Figure (cartoon, rainbow, N blue to C red):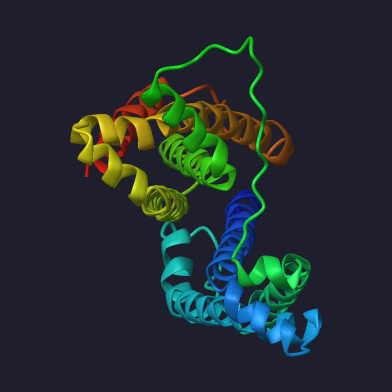
Length: 314
């Protein structure tokens, strides 16, 4: 039983940690890029005054401060919660009474190392991003790849073409929308499918992580889509397009992306739990057989559709 608890903890730490690291990397790059795009004139003036790329880029280390604050808050919260976690995991009295201990290497790994890593990542990305010509920065010109249309291509209706181009222009936001659906699907179904494999403690952690990641990335991405298309939306309203037509043409294209992300998350959580039971728990006795949880799928899908459509509508 103790080995099973440790194995469950390692799997959950790897899964949730991997999701958070990937999300933080993408978010950091997203915000550094947005800052450079919106402050191109100031950065161009600095380069025109003789500042080198590295002299300008090194100040982007400040983006790592948010990582430091986040890791410190979460580490302290975890240490405060740890005694309760130990008591809940040993509620049947199967193990000797254990108390959590402070480990310096753990604190270094979860606070100092991530902070330094993301500070360096912000500086390196900014360095390569501002290697643009000075005039390009002063004009705040953005690198946009324009595809020349062929004569044979079908002339699509305006709203369909707008929906298509909205998806093409901001590919990173497409990833965010799909990733948010992936997190919601995988984490909610996983938490409901772990009743016989782990404690309610682990299930609560999993579903909390999934909901935080899902709603944070979805709201951020959809808000960015709307903000980047404010002029288009205003012109559409001037020409008489309804609120529903504006919403469908700007945000409607992301609906299929989100549903695809949900499907991928469903497959991912099943394969992960299957591997955990058949490989990680292979040498442990009395581990129940794992099969696909259709009830969890139905509940998760219904909740996702309702939540997603409400957010799109609002």
